Length: 238
Length: 347
Image (cartoon, rainbow over all chains, first blue to last red; front, side):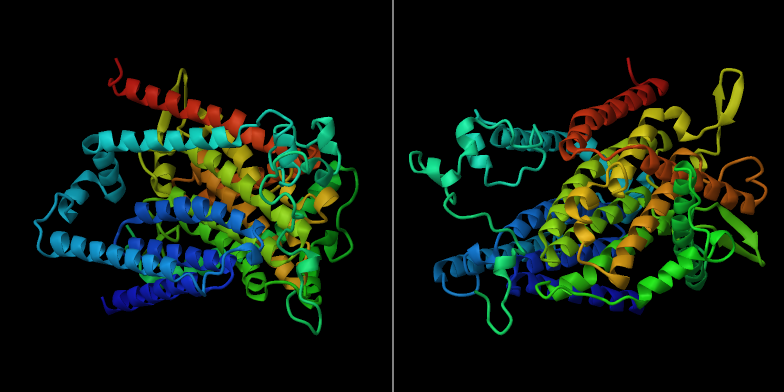
């Protein structure tokens, strides 16, 4: 038993340190990496509690899918374009602190009213063992008692997918081709930007004057790790 | 479940890890010999008898090379990204069963490291963390080719992971468990196929899932014809362009070990793992069978590499989302319907 306690404190300590690091790190990619560490530690806590299924789903969904996509975006953003997180903005910081405090109180309230003083639910160790384990118990609960909520959640997710399709749908060429010049075309329906209208082949600035300018068009595409962005020997960052 | 003492498990894990490392070294030899044979040339012959010491010479060469770090690299991320690939590749082997429980040296020994009740998902979870090694290494190198390779890898792995996971749902439904040991035991029962009585290997009842799993597994391990992240004709060598010496070899180790683990995984899920003639009486035959099955899959990987040209990027994503995803969902629906009908619950 003491071994389990020591391992738990090790995991919890790393989780809290990395969560602090997410907030403190100056580079957003470092924040994402620390968040990954934090997620994996939480999965480890789930394993220690005997909820293997939840742990694996935590890793597959949050660490393996959502955070990868987040990292995907962060890698393409020049850190110097991001708003400064660590100085100024007193209103945002106050709101953030307030929301964090409210969340903490909510968790505390849940612990007090359910775990400490509330009556015991049906998910006791004996009941779970009778069904055949945590995974089976979770499956039975979701597909019988909470079926309606489950179906509503899947509807909401479907709406989210439809929204993504509508946003990413190729618009009528002319506007889209013009805008797409400045994006990295991954999985573009045609693979290349060859089928653009004739105007799009011209230098962008020349055509940009007559049309309403999309945000950021005047700026050249700077990818992370652009050679121009590197520190010069003997000098600081540009 | 796991009633053996922890130190025995540690010894077994240590053995498996070393077997994987040696297996990886000789996988490169096997690959070069096979590629040589398919392209009508000799492959490695100079180091040792029939070139058998070539992998060891390669390892020593990589150890002795200069370790270059680009000046603009993000040092910490650059340091540990290759380790993520290596560690996550090797951890997957922890849930592969090489047999049941045997009685040897006066003890009951389990021929697996651990029997997690979500074993199959465990392998998928760690392969999904593995992609971090690639995209973080790519980003930290401060190189455009690397970054593009990393972006491709991320999109590719996230897409094909869905196919990989969903192709296993049919197997889970038939076995009624996510534990690889239960899946292995389920395949040792007999199946009546007309006049024939065969072992209930899931390749017989889930042929479509098997094909989809193999396609997704090749893409997941970034191998030809899906090796877009390191397409040398357009991206120098993709995400590991800036890596040299031993850091590069961690990527290399990770790629080959994940191929071996995926092959063992496929053998366990679809080909009955250690099942075969005489394997219920002699446990060592079981281990031999699962290794032979894995080598067949590894040969398949090499065969693909020697045969097929590389996909174009939009073809790759289109294949995943427009062809494989509908097929894999169809497989789940049909399997579920047949399962319900056989229990008399449908109509």
